[in-house]
Amino acid sequence: MKSKKKLQKIEWKQSVVKSIIYRSITLLLGTLTVYIITGSLSIATGTILLAEAVQVVIFLI
Image (cartoon, rainbow, N blue to C red; front, side):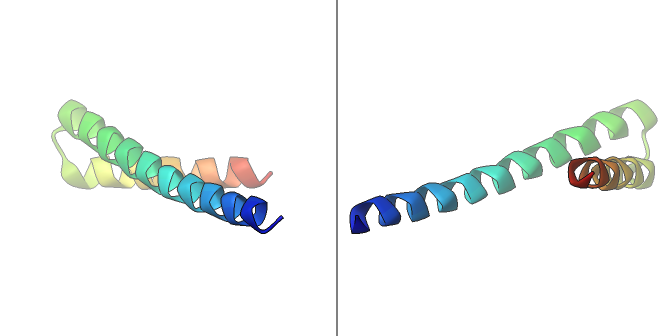
């Protein structure tokens, strides 16, 4: 039984790490895409932060 709990704990940690890495990559790629289109880092950053905020709200609904 202990090994099952330990395995679940490891899987949970791996899931969190994967999620953080995935979100970081999507943020970077999104910012880069908007920057290439607009040529403005401030617009790119603002757009991506707004998109992330909307995604969080939609996730929580």
